[in-house]
Length: 184
Image (tube, rainbow, N blue to C red):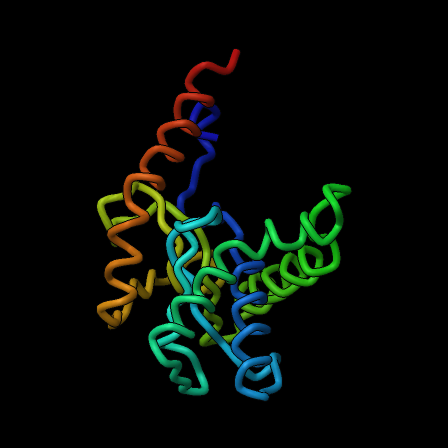
Protein backbone atom coordinates (compact mmCIF):
# COMPACT_ATOMS: atom_id res chain seq x y z
CA UNK A 1 0.00 0.00 0.00
CA UNK A 2 2.86 2.37 0.81
CA UNK A 3 4.55 1.50 -2.47
CA UNK A 4 1.41 2.57 -4.34
CA UNK A 5 0.80 5.66 -2.20
CA UNK A 6 -2.50 4.49 -0.74
CA UNK A 7 -1.48 3.57 2.80
CA UNK A 8 -3.76 5.10 5.43
CA UNK A 9 -2.93 3.83 8.93
CA UNK A 10 -6.41 4.82 10.12
CA UNK A 11 -7.98 2.30 7.75
CA UNK A 12 -5.68 -0.72 8.05
CA UNK A 13 -6.64 -3.17 10.79
CA UNK A 14 -5.29 -6.45 12.00
CA UNK A 15 -8.46 -8.08 13.27
CA UNK A 16 -7.98 -9.66 16.70
CA UNK A 17 -11.68 -10.00 17.48
CA UNK A 18 -11.40 -13.80 17.62
CA UNK A 19 -9.33 -13.46 20.81
CA UNK A 20 -12.01 -11.20 22.31
CA UNK A 21 -14.81 -13.60 21.39
CA UNK A 22 -12.92 -16.44 23.06
CA UNK A 23 -12.10 -14.38 26.15
CA UNK A 24 -15.75 -13.33 26.45
CA UNK A 25 -16.93 -16.94 26.14
CA UNK A 26 -14.44 -18.29 28.69
CA UNK A 27 -15.17 -15.57 31.27
CA UNK A 28 -18.92 -15.98 30.76
CA UNK A 29 -18.62 -19.75 31.22
CA UNK A 30 -16.72 -19.38 34.49
CA UNK A 31 -19.06 -16.70 35.88
CA UNK A 32 -22.39 -18.04 34.56
CA UNK A 33 -22.93 -15.00 32.33
CA UNK A 34 -24.29 -14.49 28.82
CA UNK A 35 -21.19 -14.24 26.56
CA UNK A 36 -22.99 -11.67 24.39
CA UNK A 37 -23.05 -9.36 27.42
CA UNK A 38 -19.38 -9.81 28.38
CA UNK A 39 -16.64 -7.63 26.96
CA UNK A 40 -13.00 -8.41 27.67
CA UNK A 41 -10.59 -6.09 25.84
CA UNK A 42 -7.68 -8.08 24.41
CA UNK A 43 -4.53 -6.17 23.57
CA UNK A 44 -1.08 -6.98 22.18
CA UNK A 45 -0.93 -9.36 19.25
CA UNK A 46 -2.58 -12.53 18.00
CA UNK A 47 -0.18 -15.34 18.91
CA UNK A 48 0.48 -17.10 22.20
CA UNK A 49 1.76 -14.83 24.93
CA UNK A 50 1.21 -11.72 22.79
CA UNK A 51 -2.55 -12.20 23.34
CA UNK A 52 -3.20 -10.16 26.50
CA UNK A 53 -6.74 -10.31 27.89
CA UNK A 54 -7.50 -7.39 30.19
CA UNK A 55 -9.73 -9.17 32.69
CA UNK A 56 -9.38 -6.18 35.02
CA UNK A 57 -11.21 -4.07 32.41
CA UNK A 58 -13.95 -6.61 31.70
CA UNK A 59 -17.55 -5.46 31.65
CA UNK A 60 -19.34 -6.52 33.66
CA UNK A 61 -16.66 -6.36 36.37
CA UNK A 62 -15.36 -9.83 37.26
CA UNK A 63 -12.65 -11.06 39.58
CA UNK A 64 -10.73 -14.32 39.80
CA UNK A 65 -8.24 -15.68 42.32
CA UNK A 66 -4.63 -15.36 41.06
CA UNK A 67 -4.30 -19.05 40.12
CA UNK A 68 -7.59 -19.08 38.21
CA UNK A 69 -6.70 -15.78 36.48
CA UNK A 70 -3.36 -17.24 35.34
CA UNK A 71 -5.05 -20.41 34.05
CA UNK A 72 -7.79 -18.41 32.28
CA UNK A 73 -5.21 -16.12 30.65
CA UNK A 74 -3.22 -19.14 29.47
CA UNK A 75 -6.35 -20.73 28.03
CA UNK A 76 -7.24 -17.54 26.13
CA UNK A 77 -3.68 -17.30 24.80
CA UNK A 78 -3.65 -20.91 23.62
CA UNK A 79 -7.28 -21.22 22.49
CA UNK A 80 -6.28 -21.52 18.82
CA UNK A 81 -4.04 -24.46 19.65
CA UNK A 82 -6.87 -25.97 21.71
CA UNK A 83 -9.13 -25.89 18.64
CA UNK A 84 -6.49 -27.43 16.35
CA UNK A 85 -5.93 -30.24 18.87
CA UNK A 86 -9.68 -30.82 19.20
CA UNK A 87 -9.86 -31.17 15.40
CA UNK A 88 -6.91 -33.59 15.50
CA UNK A 89 -4.89 -31.33 13.23
CA UNK A 90 -7.59 -31.33 10.54
CA UNK A 91 -8.10 -27.58 10.62
CA UNK A 92 -8.54 -24.56 12.81
CA UNK A 93 -11.46 -22.49 14.03
CA UNK A 94 -13.94 -21.72 11.28
CA UNK A 95 -17.30 -20.74 12.75
CA UNK A 96 -15.78 -18.64 15.51
CA UNK A 97 -13.49 -16.95 12.97
CA UNK A 98 -16.49 -16.18 10.78
CA UNK A 99 -18.40 -14.79 13.76
CA UNK A 100 -15.43 -12.62 14.80
CA UNK A 101 -14.94 -11.34 11.25
CA UNK A 102 -18.61 -10.51 10.92
CA UNK A 103 -18.66 -8.76 14.30
CA UNK A 104 -15.69 -6.58 13.35
CA UNK A 105 -17.13 -5.84 9.91
CA UNK A 106 -20.51 -4.82 11.35
CA UNK A 107 -18.72 -2.51 13.82
CA UNK A 108 -16.74 -0.85 11.01
CA UNK A 109 -19.88 -0.45 8.90
CA UNK A 110 -21.85 0.95 11.85
CA UNK A 111 -19.09 3.51 12.48
CA UNK A 112 -18.84 4.42 8.78
CA UNK A 113 -22.60 4.99 8.76
CA UNK A 114 -22.37 7.47 11.62
CA UNK A 115 -23.04 5.37 14.71
CA UNK A 116 -21.13 6.89 17.60
CA UNK A 117 -19.24 5.12 20.37
CA UNK A 118 -18.25 2.06 18.33
CA UNK A 119 -15.20 0.46 19.95
CA UNK A 120 -13.33 -2.61 18.74
CA UNK A 121 -9.83 -3.80 19.47
CA UNK A 122 -7.55 -3.98 16.45
CA UNK A 123 -3.88 -4.56 15.68
CA UNK A 124 -2.78 -1.23 14.22
CA UNK A 125 0.14 1.12 13.72
CA UNK A 126 0.57 2.43 17.24
CA UNK A 127 2.60 4.55 19.60
CA UNK A 128 0.99 3.08 22.72
CA UNK A 129 4.00 0.85 23.46
CA UNK A 130 7.54 0.39 22.19
CA UNK A 131 6.13 -1.81 19.38
CA UNK A 132 5.26 -0.19 16.03
CA UNK A 133 2.05 -2.23 15.90
CA UNK A 134 -0.10 -3.19 18.85
CA UNK A 135 -3.70 -4.18 19.41
CA UNK A 136 -5.71 -1.84 21.62
CA UNK A 137 -9.32 -0.67 21.88
CA UNK A 138 -10.07 1.76 19.05
CA UNK A 139 -12.88 4.27 18.73
CA UNK A 140 -14.12 3.85 15.17
CA UNK A 141 -15.74 6.50 13.02
CA UNK A 142 -16.55 7.47 9.45
CA UNK A 143 -12.86 7.69 8.52
CA UNK A 144 -11.62 4.58 10.31
CA UNK A 145 -9.82 5.06 13.60
CA UNK A 146 -11.08 8.17 15.35
CA UNK A 147 -9.00 7.56 18.47
CA UNK A 148 -6.71 4.88 19.84
CA UNK A 149 -8.01 4.37 23.37
CA UNK A 150 -4.71 2.91 24.53
CA UNK A 151 -4.04 0.37 27.24
CA UNK A 152 -6.17 1.82 29.99
CA UNK A 153 -5.35 1.06 33.61
CA UNK A 154 -3.59 -2.30 33.82
CA UNK A 155 -3.28 -4.56 36.83
CA UNK A 156 0.23 -5.59 37.91
CA UNK A 157 -0.45 -9.03 36.38
CA UNK A 158 -1.39 -7.41 33.04
CA UNK A 159 1.62 -5.06 33.10
CA UNK A 160 3.84 -8.14 33.35
CA UNK A 161 2.00 -9.80 30.46
CA UNK A 162 2.63 -6.71 28.31
CA UNK A 163 6.31 -6.62 29.25
CA UNK A 164 6.69 -10.36 28.55
CA UNK A 165 5.10 -9.99 25.10
CA UNK A 166 7.32 -7.18 23.80
CA UNK A 167 10.24 -9.21 22.41
CA UNK A 168 7.96 -11.68 20.63
CA UNK A 169 5.85 -8.88 19.15
CA UNK A 170 8.93 -6.97 17.97
CA UNK A 171 10.25 -10.16 16.35
CA UNK A 172 6.95 -10.79 14.57
CA UNK A 173 6.80 -7.20 13.35
CA UNK A 174 10.36 -7.41 12.02
CA UNK A 175 9.53 -10.68 10.22
CA UNK A 176 6.54 -9.02 8.56
CA UNK A 177 8.50 -5.95 7.55
CA UNK A 178 11.36 -8.09 6.20
CA UNK A 179 8.88 -10.19 4.22
CA UNK A 180 7.40 -7.09 2.57
CA UNK A 181 10.84 -5.58 1.93
CA UNK A 182 11.94 -8.75 0.11
CA UNK A 183 8.82 -9.06 -2.07
CA UNK A 184 9.41 -8.76 -5.78
